[in-house]
Structure formats: structure tokens, C-alpha cells
Length: 329
Image (cartoon, rainbow, N blue to C red; front, side, top):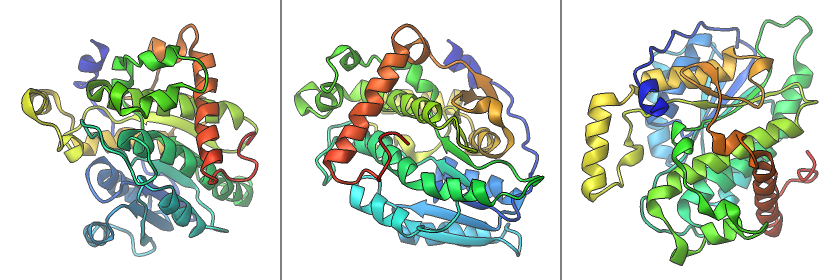
């Protein structure tokens, strides 16, 4: 019920902050919430805005559209990032080696509805929504640390932020696999014979939220704010692959209750530049600190959070893409 009530909440305007010396990175930035997040954050006139996109041509089109509203002092840079490939994620991060990233908004995601595997051999939603954002967050940590170290004393710019875009649908995840022995959860989610398309997106967003919370708990000594904003159910192309009765149900829901991508973006930008230390390790919705669903904070949730962290890190280590020192941050 809370999910539906939240759709009608009035989203406040986000006051610009001083980003004149800051680099902002947004994944999935060529369309939908990612694009509107870029447009909203340009109001704060960042020194540099990096759009991470799967399709470079569409990314360049997005740059052209954004160029009409950006400040003359803002540089917009578009780079390729395909989260269905660990190689692409690693190459993207390598391209930022030695560069400060002040604000990282990990927004890119997918909702497949049917079984498909990436070239790395993982179920598509599992890799795009969980494994690759986790890898990217670990790879970007040094960039965020460098930005924190470079922050001048008394600066009125926000602390470096790492915001994992979440979803209220995490509350609807059934995720029966969580009851399996340690080491078997992600392997089972990657088993086609056990695939539940109706539950997969919600489950991946839940696991992503657990990863964000554990990341924050391990990074408490950092001068970096880690949080997980929910933009709400927005009228975007995320659900373009739905079919049958699901397609018509989603269309009806979108028409009657769907939030505009602009309002969804405000929720994300609020978490990434306006919210401070009190949002570290927190879930946000409607631009407010909120409690996540019981499955992510109730009895057994902390252990599940740690289990998912270790399983994800284990996969990244096995694939030889885990950054040095990442197991303990």
C-alpha cells in the first residue's frame, strides 16, 4: 500500500548547490530518469558531467540536448559503459584512472521479463542491476576518495556522494533463494530452470539495496556519503520489453499513477547533492529518508546483507575483476 500512496507524493524542488569544481558521473544517462537527472544536476553548474551510456550515438544525442541548458563553464563528456560486460565496466573505470569523481550516480538498469544471459554467462538482470553496479562502485571508490582528499577546508560543495538508484519494488521481492545456504543464492538466481521472471527485477533491486547498505557500513571511515534513492515508478522506457497482460497492466498503472521522469530525477539528485551524512547507508524515497522494507532491515536482514556482499565479491574475484583491497575496502 505504501508503494501506491508514495506515487502521489509531491516532490519538492531541489535547490542548486555549488558544484563549480566538481565532476559528476551518471550511468544510464542518455534517456529516462538518467537523462532527467543530468538535466536537473546541470542547474548546479558542475565543472564536468560524465554521461555513461551503453549506446554512444544516443549518448551524443543526449549531450546535444543537454548542451542547450548547461552553463558555459560545464564540460559534458560521454563515455561508453555496457553493464552486461565486466570488460566494459573495467574499461570504463580504467578511463577515469587518476581523475576525481565527486558525485557518482549509479542509475543504469534493466527489466528483461524473460530469461537471457550476458556474454559473461550471467542472467541479464542479475548482471546489469547487481553485479556490474557493484563492480563499478568498487572501481570508483578511489576516484571518490581522491575527490574527498582534494576538498578544500570550508568548501561549500557537498561531500563526495555515491548514490545507488534503488526502487520501491524491492519491497515486493519474494526472493525465496535468500533461504539457501551461503554460496548458493546467486548461483540459483543464475539457473534458468529456477528463473522467475515476475520476481527478478524486484529481487535484483533488493540485492542492490543490500549491497549499498553493506558498502556504506564498510565505508564509515570515508569522507563519502553512500545512499540509495528511490525515484518512484516513472513513465520511462524501462518496461518496454513487457508483453501480454503485464504490458497492459503496466500501461494502465503508468497512465494513472506514473511519476514524471523529471520528478523521479529530483528524488535522485536530492540524495546525490542535498542530503548529507544523515543519509549515509540509508534508503530514500520522495526526497526523504525512509525505512526500507522489512526484508531489507528486519530479522536476518543484516546477515543477508553480508551474505550477498560476500557472494558478489566472490563472483568478481572469480572473474578476476575485483579491485585490489576491495574485499575489506
